[in-house]
Length: 317
Image 1 (cartoon, one colour):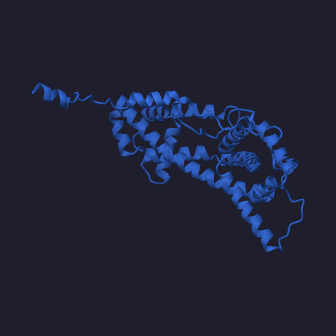
Image 2: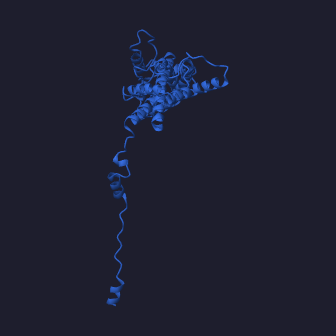
Image 3: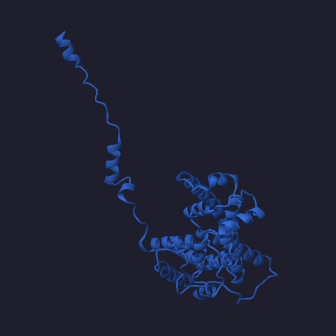
């Protein structure tokens, strides 16, 4: 009973954090698009790479302008603007492959804005050799890897802020949510039903929220203690401290992201429905397959010659 209650509470919490993390991720993505975060970071980084500048200065801007004039960038920009007739169309590409970058560098004929290494590769206006293009592609991929890490750190910080806003606006406390799920069987059962439906929707949680549970209001309809319908007791130190701490914990857990919570939700629902999945024979130490592998991998014993029988030795002497 205790194990089932704990598992069902965990399923309910995973559902809550999956829904809220999906909402927070949508907010972060909206902010990123509004600020042109990916496109601006890409352009500024390319400008710095081409100019050899450590910051996005005037030299980097000139190099970027030269890069924007290449056919490769123009094609990427046109593709990025498709479907944006009712919104800003000149947003610029958010991504560019290493091959496209190398081709654009090969296309550049004015060497003055390029850094010394690239200018050397383009000496006398010749086309880049295969080895030179490979070196440029490797350099670009390495730089984009660092840029991707910087973007993830930015997105994680914004995700925390968005999660905190959601937690405060919806009065979503991780502590009070867990308490309600643990103490109220009806709430726990409703959350389990919603969790099973959400987990059965698709094999991946990227951008997916169950149609029946999409917002904080929907979660409150399940019976969870969300919202500000009940009177707040700000004069009570205990009430204030528990809620503020609960909001902070909620925001911190939402930083793990919707895919993490969907994966955990699916695993917990599967565990509750079918029990623990048995390991395959190759990973079960007691299975014949594992035993046969262990025997086959054991070193073959070296057979020693039979010892002479003392009695026969004496008779022969």
